[in-house]
Image (cartoon, rainbow over all chains, first blue to last red; front, side, top):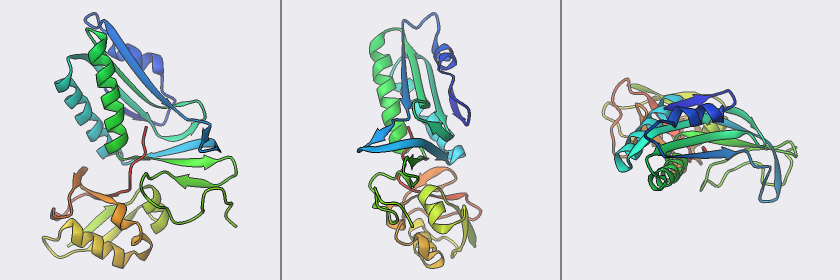
Length: 149
Length: 81
C-alpha cells in the first residue's frame, strides 16, 4: 500500500494494513520531525512532492522489496505539507513469516525512499528563517544562522 | 516544439513559478533542455548542474530525447523521509 497524505499518519492503521495470519513478524519504521539539527531549532517541516512520480517510485520500491524478500504485507505512507516537531513524516511497515526479512526489507525501503522519491523537506527554523533541504546542493541565499533583512 | 517543465522546491522558489515553458528543437535531449532552461530562466542557471530531470514521471539521463508532449520535471536533490 502506497499513500501520500496531507493528514497526520495513523500509525495503528498502517500497522494493521500489513498484519496477516501468515506473518509472524511486523516491523514499523516511523520518521519523525526532529527538534534540533546541527544545533539549530526546528519549528516545523514542510514537505512537497511530485505526487505522480513519488507514488510510482514508491510502488516500484514495494514491488522490488516483494521480489527480494518473502513479504506478507508492505505499506509506505509519506506525509506532505506542514509536519510539527514529533509528528510522523513517513511510515514504512512490512510483515513476513519471520523477523529477518521484515527488518531487512524495512531498512532497504526507507533507505531507497530517501535516495530516490521526489519528495523535499523545507526546514522552518525557530529564528523565523526557512531553508529547502537538498543534500549535496550548495544553496545560494541565507547562510545558516543569519536572519535575512 | 514546446516542453513544459515542472519545478519543485528550491527550483520553484528560484524561478518564482511552478513550471516553465521551453522552446526545443524536435528530438532535443535533456542536455539541450538544460541549456535552454538556463538561458530562458537565468535564476535557475546556478542550480541546474545539481538537478535531475524526469520524463513522464521517470528519471531521464542527459542523453535521453524529450518526446513531443512529454511531461518533463526538474528534480532537485531529494530529501524525503
